[in-house]
Image (tube, rainbow, N blue to C red; front, side, top):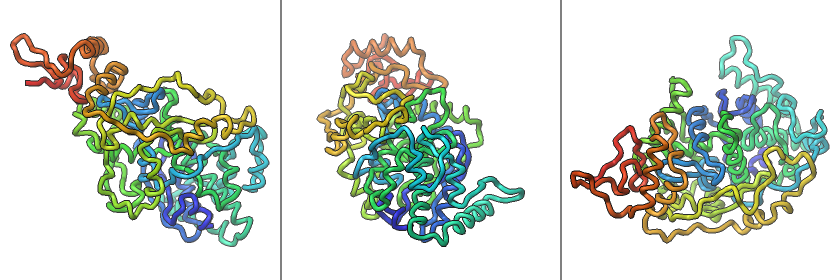
Length: 479
């Protein structure tokens, strides 16, 4: 069983870190169950916990632009990349795309590969409680007077007892059940209680599980989840990726605390700095901070410089996919990674590239279509995008010598919507400033009535070289 699971990332180090804390960010499954089952399997390294930072994830979700699949900040676009995924989680981002055929019913593979009976014939979901019980954890509820340590020990002992004597085909089914729980409820998690298993046919040959780019599928699923209505709180999928990505790229927020330096994957180095203020208050303060601090004090575009890659073989495997525009695949979820919008993560100046819009040459079916209405072979339906993945996308290059042209285009495109704080500049003020920016030469400072130069942009209220001061907090004025 150890060999089969480790093939998930082709190494001896587990690729995920689990949380035992409850929050609105994830489904009803207590992740402590996964950890208990994991610890019940023999010869595995202990999993670390990361409590969810609900306010941080919600604030990031509110800044997500589903048109270009990127966050919108006053200083420009930002987006988690494949390098972020592989360094933070240890999951593979190279190899075969996680795709194939989706079916109207998964009853037959569930019964054959997992040994579980399925009630609904037209479903790609399996009941969490049934899957959990098959691994020895009948109930995840705390017993009266039971502390967290005793709770985890009891569930782990139950799982260990259920799987201790199993061998051969029975052991393989146990491993598939565990992988289904991990992949379907955490890496590619859903908001509801049932566990998604669209990927189940890929688990039939356990020796090939590690050949798939699960990290790239995680990113595709996360992008798709972030694009849901802003009225929906929380994010389905692996929230620790976003959380630790923000700890590295937005350190001035002060939301994470380093705990174990030098350990890899990087997710294990952090813990959440607990904040006792209300959720709404925390979200507002995060937006205010992002709106008002100059980007040079907020952003680390290349936070991994100096990392010892020799201790992270999965980074070397994924390097050919870094720094590239590429399509990401998870069956019927096929989304683009527009790395050209964040050339600064490659140490380049950001060129004024064309910003993506919804009028793309290719779009997947609407969100209501999840592959259960008809049998669909996504290797054919999305052939062009799959070819792009197999070619490793397109390398991002930039001949720009400054970011000025990009800032102008960014201000014209997004205007005041990049500000989300409680004191964001009035839409009318920002509109006037944006129009003035487009009329004037940004390299020629205007004069005030007293002869002193105004800001470089000629209008107080437009950021100078990406500065993110806001209208109520002393916009920069050149003197």
